[in-house]
Length: 279
Image (cartoon, rainbow, N blue to C red; front, side):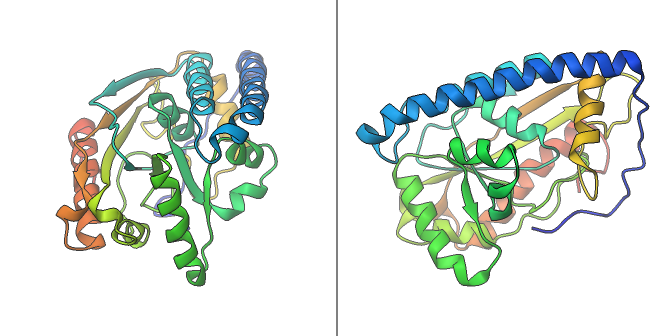
């Protein structure tokens, strides 16, 4: 995964005593809900795994419930347009922030695809593994094994969610979609049985704040960004737009498929922002 560094963050927000108190309150409740939900999920998996194996008929609904509650705790207003698909397949979306995890999980039951390093991150790695994240290595030699992993997961009924930009941005643009991961959908006969759904995620900043308020990119540390977000008294909003799913076998190559999804996602963000940042 590369890191987008086209522009330095630059936007700084001073957090005063009231903001720190609000962040502490929100953060405490968020921690209780998140890790309480994790404990419930693990308890369900103890029963679920022996009977369902790789299938997860119940536990993903706990993740969705927790993520919807998390957005409410943060105060981020949430709106969905379009219909999440029910077919076998995958979802691809633009990537602006760590908030995307809560936002996209709140919409439907999905399993994220993440770089393998995340599995070892304290706290976050536990959550990722417990919720069924599929981890991928950057080593090209692992490509075949990863394709087989994706095929097994999709045939088990899991809807995988990818961020094809390969990095997060300030939320004001869409970077070119990398076609590498799309290759997994043109193998093992999957192209004849699955669909891909492009999704646009649009953040609108709190009134008076920088339009890039929710963006998290480059060398921005997680803790200060989390503090800034939780300390904001009145939050902005996020809109998730589900575009029509497309059949994989309708495209001659992974590059054509990646290009179509990128154009769908970019067009909506560019229109919504009313600027040229969408390109």
